[in-house]
Image 1 (cartoon, rainbow, N blue to C red):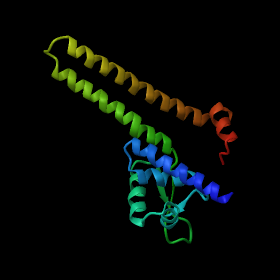
Image 2: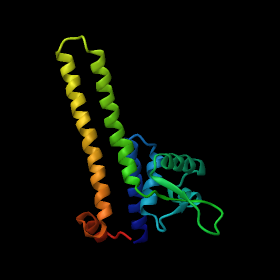
Image 3: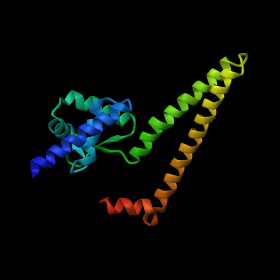
Image 4: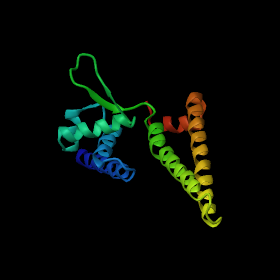
Length: 173
């Protein structure tokens, strides 16, 4: 039974690595994040991650540095322990959304603005497509920001919201 659980955990870790790789992160960063998502205790040392992921300390160091820089993971120190540990950062998913979705939307909106500026004196057909691109991405930028603000309001509501009830039902601490 334990071996089956370990295989399932390894599969999950690999799947997180692949998914995050598709968002532009190195696969090893995704694997480290995947391991931290399911590890018990929720903080892991470099040695523990190295062993669990069967990789080098250098790979773990690079991956954790990447994850810290984008706000998904934090380094923590425990009293009386000389080495540091890594754990999922508070608000990690909000950081992830801001980094990926918000950043990409903003980038495309800025491209549309530059394209429209370049096309100011051209035929009306081309700027129509750029204007549409600008409108869509400006709208998305506003709406994603509004969603993040609503999320913050929901988290402040706490106990009574349907979202938090669902989280509690799935084993949140």
